[in-house]
Image (cartoon, rainbow, N blue to C red):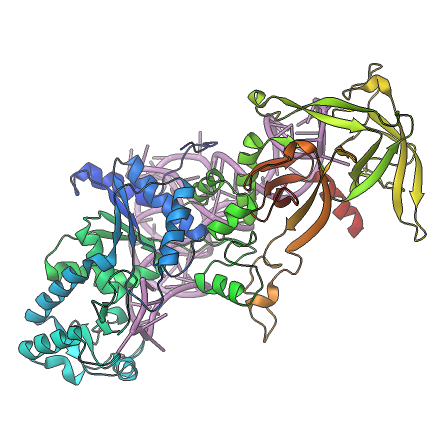
Length: 565
RNA sequence: AACCCGGUCGUGUAAUCGGUAACACACCAGGUUUUGGUCCUGGCAUUCCUGGUUCGAGUCCAGGCCGGGUAGCCA
């Protein structure tokens, strides 16, 4: 896979740890990482960054990266998500090869290890209810107290645990707990639950089990089974590390190193699975793959490239404190890549009819246009020109303010790759709205250059009315109107910051005919406007384009400044 | 004093043993240009505070301040 490297790759504290381990021979030079998603939802760009981290760390250190589904909670998990997750990782360009694993495949080993801990007096079956467990746990400032079941005999624990497994007890009536320390200042060490009873069919293990391991009991042990060297997770698991270490030590098994780093946050969006699910369920967006969503499938549909996401992952870096990346950086990474690979094309989003009065009626000629000035190998194409054209409404102003270089009455501009035209007449409807322009063209300027050296200050994109393709174009803006969606008026929640203008549908746009028949996912730059890609809703009868991201727009910035004054 | 982790330009990161605070985005100002795009040039922080060690501290020590995480039979 080619990743554009526009700046030297910076190091990070995790790579430093790996480099040191390789120097000291701690893992005999092995590097094995893993991406451990829970199949209970779709992946988002934060996951993409984690995937990028783990697969790259493995690749750059001659190691391997496993894909392991953390499927220990059958209540929430589904096969549908497993398939979608695999598709997303492949699209990002990573390959786990034969290393596809499931925590559910380890249920037997986990059970045996639990029996081992019971035999050693390090785990016990507890009869406390969920409420009682919470009460016995104590609080952040007060130690917990021991369960009356804590000192059951080893034989009784063994018998009870086996009967839990056999399904003799209803959900929630018993748990297996590690016997550690109810007074520990770390709540995770106050006899954490290892198994709960769940009479629930599992997507992979079916009805074989009715006791399911908790995260802390399953995750580290899965890492151990797979001989992971560096188990990388997010900051909120920092408090779990002592427990991660405790299980491996007490069991006397292979002991990977857990390393935590800060999860990704981005301005003007939300990132938690819970919130993304809420947006979908409450119909604020059309689905997980709504092009406004920061999900991988949403970004894909929007027209993002894997390379842009990789570069963004690299540039946001890896650290141990919370921060929020500017969405402008993501958009920069996107433009940077698209600028190099997206073919140029002309499309008019808000059409304004232009008649070239001195151009012969019924005549058509094909003008040569460059496909990508950044890529000489991309070649050229022919664009049809005729007497009636469309230009962008924004490219004409009857009373142009200072610094507006585009078309105005009496003014001459260039039509890209075509001719210089001069506006001679403005036609308005009864409301005073401009509906049509009449212009004259200079035949000597064919191709867009004036032989007499005359200069124009603007070059406009255009499309021949008769030859253009009619298309729907969907414009997207940030999902939320505030940089930090959590800043709200009293009594409101984050959803009150949802940006009502995040989607604008333009049902009747005109695109040059060369894009006809382009498959969904095909990306273009519509010159002077932005990058667009063919949506999955598109058909030959009705092409649909998504605006992936705008071009940088200096004029919009100036105009905004003028408006303020 | 619950415990754990952390604090470097507006934002995100870098600075190997203690040795001129660097890069990118954003922003501002210019240049080039048949995309007001791209590209090019320039501008923009004495590292949370206070003290200490040292010829020398973003880096080491002490105290403070501020931020995040943790009381699921979720992961």
